[in-house]
Length: 289
Image (tube, rainbow, N blue to C red; front, top):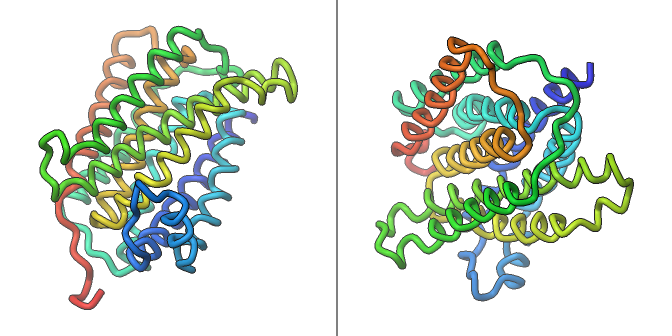
């Protein structure tokens, strides 16, 4: 029952996260451009936008469900459930926010759904939340994600096409959210073992720093890029980071039998290929939108 509750909380989180992202996109586009050299001014301007503030409020609620889900279920399973939120994103973007999703995006969404079903069917039975980790593995994996996020943020300065910077910032935000998620998972285990003293872990500093950096990267990415591709790549980068981190850092199980293991690898590959298909251009339903 604990595992099913964790999955339910992850589903609620996926829905709320994407609603919040779509509101933040409209609010960020109505605010002045984010200036990384003036973080406090940029934050004030963003929160002065009513839609952005509503989006952040919804995102805060989604974050609480996310933390609760990670405390109850293995990280890789929670992130796999959250990855299904990209399907909800596309439906809400078309039906509620007037965005048109191209054929390639729908193919990517179908591949994501198939990958998640395959992953869910073949995951072995788990007991507990799998919060134990090795410090060297944690440090190495978190450092790799931080480096990847930093390189994506610096993209145009190191020769990447400037017109893709919004999409790259979305991916950077996703990796930074992944850093925060893995740190939260570690802290949840420490709190379970040591009580409130677990909150004094150095990983709490990592969590806060990564979350702040992800906030600015995400807001700037939403201003510079189209809504659905940027939101989709943010979620996919965060989810893939969480799934891989759950397996590598926390030892979440993969099947020991060859056929289910092959199916799991195929499921991960489908999710990654779906992320590659999503960035194609997205048009608003009308010229004025």
